[in-house]
Image (cartoon, rainbow, N blue to C red; front, side, top):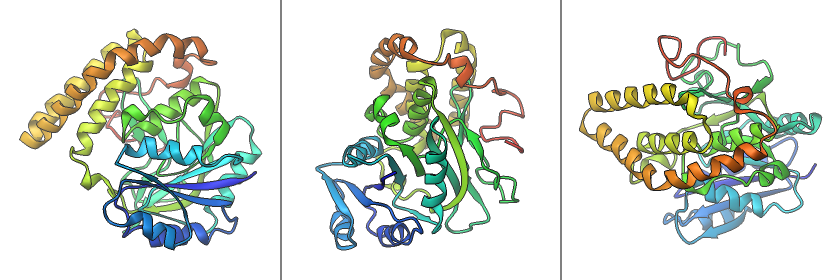
Length: 320
């Protein structure tokens, strides 16, 4: 299967040399490496070109989702597309192992990897995501010490697009990443649509070292605001009305937590909620088509995991 790597980039010049070097060092080489530059002002496009990558230049920052879609579109003829953040460095066997999982199972549309901290590889960053019925996305193992329990291959709800491999045709068939989300949770939204369409997501514990926050610090709004915004949009698009109680509980809890965190946190949360409101009608209109075309019911896709009490947490419990 022909496979390409896509690196969405926004002012990531300082990260690109190490990232692209790790892509070039793969035991199973990529057939092409594409850097999609989101209107960077730090010379990222020139750095990427000098390092041998194919550069797709966008005139302005249109968000991770748009950059990912442009890269996927540029991979015509490829069966698989790896999405890799600029601040990620891949182990040499990463591509070979994830591609083997994708090629070995025709029902798999995405393969998540074992993401660890670049600063301290003994700390986990993400080993695949799960979605709860209150709208919260859980990142398996995040912040935990790597004690070996995440070294077992298996299945997850969806892959973190910071370091994941996708079946290109499957992604295109469900419409790609939703560019209205801009950044954050766009991979969870894609994962949900892939699962509703009957696809599965695998987990392969090949290592990707992730610095984290490579572009987040440059955003005009804090990450918490984007998460609040995009959680509401995802829920409006896909969740049934009978889960509204769980969603309302989580939204109220987030509002209280934001207020207790101080004025900046509260402002970020309120911005996220307010910026979601204009898009909610369109998301609600899309629900009917999403359900009509679904191969699986949403109850079969989003597990009934705890969403309140100590077991909910906001991060996965031990053993997930």
